[in-house]
Length: 638
Image (cartoon, rainbow, N blue to C red; front, side):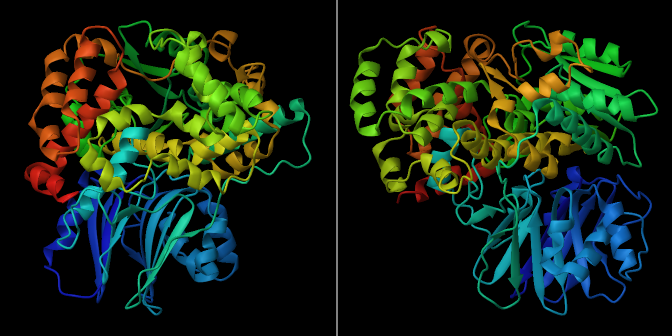
């Protein structure tokens, strides 16, 4: 994993702009720093050496100087692509995957992406055509931000690199703020800054010198094409073969390699496959919590003992909230997934012994593991036979009459279920994934900010993807929505920034795009049946993992927010949420914020997640926007 930055455009810029942009990414690549300049284009690179450590410097050019590339990530099938290109007459000078990108472009043009299997974000300068080609991997494992100011295209691996550029606007986008308080992150392609975008997964952007701004083009999407179905036994056997091959490709490394092991099904499956492929004991890393409600370390130890791994465990301090401000500078934009804290800590632990770690991320989305999938499918059985015109008044009234019981387990919260049945499918799923639902956001923002939204609502993000969903089956439908939003904007963002903060490369076998394509083609009943998720995966793994790993309740990777905000973080959260930083934006109803804090701290309601979301937004304003907070905040809406 590495960091890249650059720009293409007209106008004279100080010589140190590219250097300062690139050095903001030093944590992503501590091993080397190099630059390329050619008239209107400038490319900078920070390298984390993983493959062909002594060779493959970047930016890398072909011997004739026609093509130059900077590349963050790994092309796992580079050896087979290289053999094909060699047979077609291309001569290679290095043993790495960067040079494969150059000659794949020369051979296939922009169609090269159909030959690649990996995680990547790259920029390739085609000098004869005076054209810059940007691309991001199929599932958005690696990030790429960009901005067009009318004459210059600026891009980089993280926002912090772009913020150095003197032509970049630093105005917060109110639509992104609405998105953030709904999802807990800012979904692609928007960023927190107006006019700054993330290149969406499975997309390219080609910009020719001197021409108007180009639009991204999608080269891949999850198909969800269900054809001739294998038997469940046949599918299980094929799944193990595909999973083993995906892990095998990700074991190629010239530096020490290990794995995260939470004790959940997905990470345990990855470790089981690694153990069967590796000649030496696998290095595994786990985080434990003092609170048994959040602690999976005993399950991780069970798997580690079964496969005789070199297991490392570190307990997270139950008062480990020192990272709050550090997280804001890591993510560069508001990010409210509190599991970023243990993710940061497990990456910190892993980096003590390895430079590459495999993880189990992406399994829930493809295999149907989230509990909300079960809830959605069950609700759809009731929704689908009844027209919306009937459901809205009937279930809406019942939901209004039924007493609120946020304190109870979801199965007993009939009010939430009745309200969900009154909504359309997209709106209901949006409600289930929202960190602050529509009603809360209406109270959160004041009238001035709501007018700035001009009728925009965050549900539009899901509606946009729903309009292109390749399947209308309730399970496949919400899996598709998560693959386009939550997986990319939350999971991948969290892991990329946390790992890169420690110069650690994390590889995701369950996000192998051929595996994801194949899983999407299988019948939904292979994934969710009789209230049980990951049906096929768990059955296929029975020879490899014990029942207490496969069939225990899902725990997740959470932190005890509710307790923190009533205990050790009681005063800090009060000062942050009710203090001057949020108040001076002129966006929030401060009386509502006070009610959230007081009701939570008095134990009347659990507002742990909304308060964390506000805390992280306040930290972003202080630590990223700095002295610009008041000026820029007031600019929005004036």
